[in-house]
Image 1: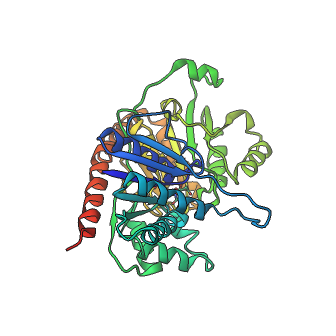
Image 2 (image 1 turned 120 degrees about the vertical axis):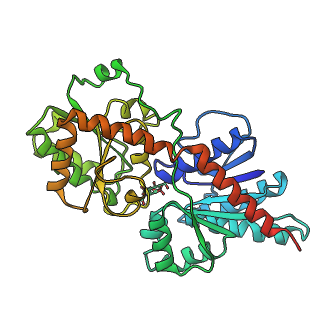
Image 3 (image 1 turned 90 degrees about the horizontal axis):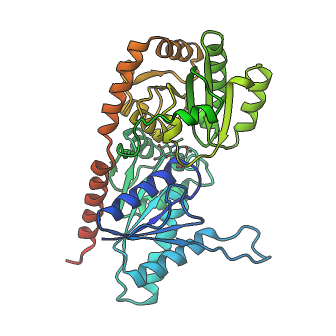
Length: 381
Ligand code: GMT
C-alpha cells in the first residue's frame, strides 16, 4: 500500500505512535509518506520506504496566523496525486483530518479521473477531551470525524467519550497504543547512572509533555513524601507548560537535590532501564503510551483509574490505579513497591508480559486490515 501519515511532530503520544506506526509499516514493505511541520521526533534518520514532506507555511504580513492547515492540505493533495496514495492516515482530528478532507476536494476539482485516497483518522485523546470540548471547536472536530472514511480511537474510553460528545455517524474501532518490545526492554547502563549523578538509590520516573492533565503537582507531592521514607531520586523527562511551576515547588519543598528535570529526550529506554517506578497521576488520559513503554522495560506504574489506564494496567498486578488526586494512596502504594523487593520483582515481570500483548507487530496488522477495509469499501461497484 501507499500510505500518507499526517501527524504532529512535537513531543507527545500521537506523534510518537504515528512515527512508530509509519516505521513499522515501512518495515513491512509499504511505502509511507509523512506530512508534518518538522520531522516527527521519533522518526529518526532515513530508512527505506519512508519519505518525509515538510509542510512549509506561507508567511505574508496580512496573515497574522499562518495557514498551516491549508499548506498541509496542498501538500497532501500534491503528494497523493503524484505518488498515488491509497490511504491518508490523520493522527489527531484537527487539523490533520480536515486538511486531508480538503486535499481530497482539491484532487476532485483538479481532474475528474484523479484516484482519491481513503481517509483514516485516529483520535488520540486531547483532540476530543480538550480541543473537542471547546465550544468554538466542537463543530469542526465533528466534521473531521464524520467526513473520515474510517475512525479509530486508542482506547475504549476514548471511543465512548467520542460517542457521548459527538454522536458520530459511523462506528469507531479501537486500536490501542503499542510498543516494540525488541527496542523497549530493560537494558541497564551503569555509566548513565554515574553521568546523572545517581548512586544506588531508588529511581522514580515521569515522562510527558507537562500539560495540565498530567497533574505534575501531584507527582511533586507524592515524591516529597517518599523522600522522608527512602533514599530516592525523581527523574522528570519532557517539557511543557507545567514544568516551571514544578521546579519552583521542588525548590520550595527543599527537595531540589533529589529531583532532576532532564527536558525532552528522544531515546528514553536507557532512562526507563534505570527506573523502579513510573508515576502517571493524569486526571484524563486516553491511553498513556509512556506507561506502556515503561512496563515494557519492567517498570511498574502508579497511575489513576481514569481514562484508558485500566485497559492495560491491572491494579495490584502491574502497579496500582488510584482515584485522581488521591495523593495519600498513591504515596502509600509507591512506597510499598519501592520497599518490597519481592513484590517489585513480580510486578516488574508481569509488566513485561503485559507489554508483549501490545506488541507493535500485532497492532500494525490491525491498522493494515483497517486500511484494506477502507480501500475495499471505496472501490466502485
Ligand atoms: O496531551 C498529550 O499527552 C499528547 C497527546 C497527543 O495527542 O500527542 O497524547 C495522547 O495520545 C497518546 C497516543 O495515542 C496517548 O497515549 C495519550 O494518553 C494521549 N494523551 C491524553 O489523552 C492526555
